[in-house]
Length: 427
Ligand code: PMP
Image 1 (cartoon, helix red, strand yellow):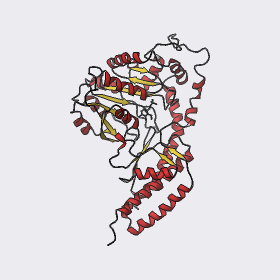
Image 2 (tube, rainbow, N blue to C red):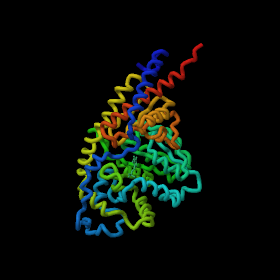
Image 3 (tube, helix red, strand yellow):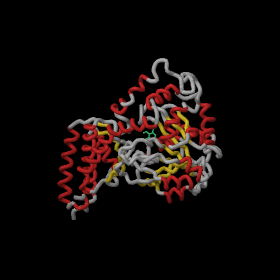
Image 4 (spheres, protein in one colour):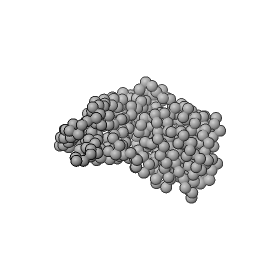
């Protein structure tokens, strides 16, 4: 029965029962961690062949390049071709880099601040604001905070952000950027649809050098047969007359090895030239041996698709398990809602307003580490203190089940505490 319909006595009974459940939970001395979206060892094992590739004596790219040496700022054409198809970006407009797309986002942002993007002057020195669809990826927000960029949250729906809010904000010339995770967004699983993407690349912006940081980290990370293909966002931006508006980022972190994959940067031809000009000061070339080993292992876009199907077989059951436990334990109380992602790495749980911090603290004291409440919001501040990010991929299925069962006890306990506190004082 919904919590709101319980009589004071029923609420008191429920609270007593949940307090006992919680004490039992604490007594179990769990040590579980659902904090970061990391691949499980079994997922990393899928790519162990990389550890022996490209193999002794193998160091030449298709065009004869010696991958051991310096140079080749664009990255190997072979790896760019594979991901150009998957990311829906022309090969000539996609560069392959080292192991982290977050590093590329960092560099791109810093170059915009210090040097200015194509056709713009340096952003630094005047107030800079970014539109941040929420809930969102905490490391994007950390980058903004690091460089003093003011973040403006905009609600994110299932198919993209509130476009009216974005349109209004773009009337401000100090709004220079916007974070977008277009496919299976972290943490809600939202998928930007084509109409939303077209609006975003075409909208009038007071800042002529407004940029969308299009982070397609989960482009091929489907959890169901309803696969959402990458949109041709650069083509759309060019058609809309704003060819330089979009920076595309991606990596193989959650395809091969999270710490030793290949990252990608995409943009208009002018943006690619701009990026390379700055990049050439920072590096004499990326790790091409890693590119070569990825090419030999993945072979082609279908090789990536087949590998992702094996990831799906390992992680989709964990997502299903989380959903089943949340439904069974919380379904009847009408106190929490959660997302049902069809891809990506996260489930976003909204508990009773004002209780997320309490839930995370209760879970922590019971040995269940959750990402901090508010982490998915700029400055770590969830105005409704209700959002909790669940990352089910890393722990074993048993640990996922134990952690989510424990978490549901904390969710209900916090909600009943709050409901009891809100009861009118006895006359
Ligand atoms: N973008 C998003 C949306 C992510 O969720 C993550 C990983 N959690 C990253 C980027 C990090 O990517 P990389 O490993 O390529 O630095």
